[in-house]
Amino acid sequence: MTDVLFLQSDELSDLATPAEYVEWVRDGYESHGNDGSAEPRTKLVSADPPGMCTGYLAILPEVGGMGGYTYAAGFGDGDVHFALPLFDAESGRMEALLDGASMNPFKTGAAGAVGVDALAREDATTLAMIGSGAQARGQLKATATVRDFETVRVFSPTRESRESFAADFDDRLDADVSAVESAAEALEEADVVVTATKAEDPVFDDADLPDDAHVTAMGQYDRGKQEIPPETVARSTYVPDLRERAFQDAGAFLAALDDGLVDEDHVHAELGEVVAGHEAGRTSDDEVTVFDSGGTGIETVAAAWNLYRRAEEQGLGRPLEFAPGSEALTGE
Image (cartoon, rainbow, N blue to C red; front, side):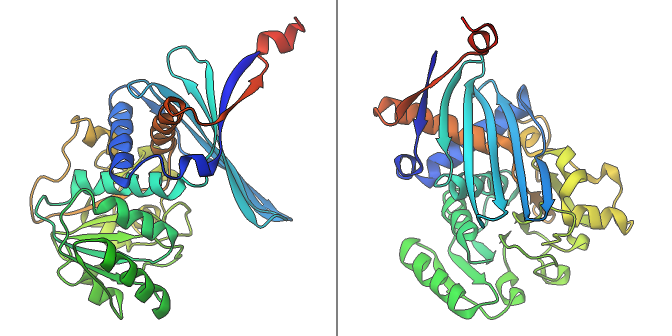
């Protein structure tokens, strides 16, 4: 039998700061850019009952771990649970099984922050946040660790939500954080724009986006979700998390492709290629850059592996016994 460390969500919730998540996820993308392997998610959809079962995988040799994420959403339960098995990237041995609920917004936020750090101007001081839910909170916590923002403007359709969001972060950050009445107002003179919504249509007009801005888009993980305008994709240096994913479910990129605004060569590079130094990111202060993040096993495995190692050092979790395949197949 093989002992596998099981870690509950609440054991992981306070193990790392947003800045540490960003560091770990940056290392994960660097590993992927050098010698790692990752695939876009597989999504299986059920019409009755309505729901989906999905998952994705990554091997990150420089990080030391491999594994992935699988979860079901919808169906009769109406909720979601994240199961995260981890394996040693050298031996292949299963090391841990994590309940990934508490880490989810942190590792996703860290992926967005790594995109900002790789592609936004170094002197960026003004951030526009479109969205005010849990993912938007994770994005701002992480992104605030990679740039010294002086001004943050947040817009979401519900006044109470955006004002509560702004009040919380105005107390938490050194920046002046305020809620505004429109996306256009949020984007005024913005250096960085982060979209973290469930929108099916663009949440801002391309004409309102400054010519030197960086956009991190977090809500484009389906052909029907076009969180940013196709015109923004077309005039940008466009960097997705995975090149293959851009052609699978990056809604705004696919819309730009369908409309003839871009061709298949418009993908500049994967984020890992930029982080690892194999491809250039931003090359001038007056270009628009886009990081399109739909979720991969890269940030998931990178964050989870480091959480597992830290939890193990602190004596957290409990062992579960897994039968090796050799025993299961032979009965020995």
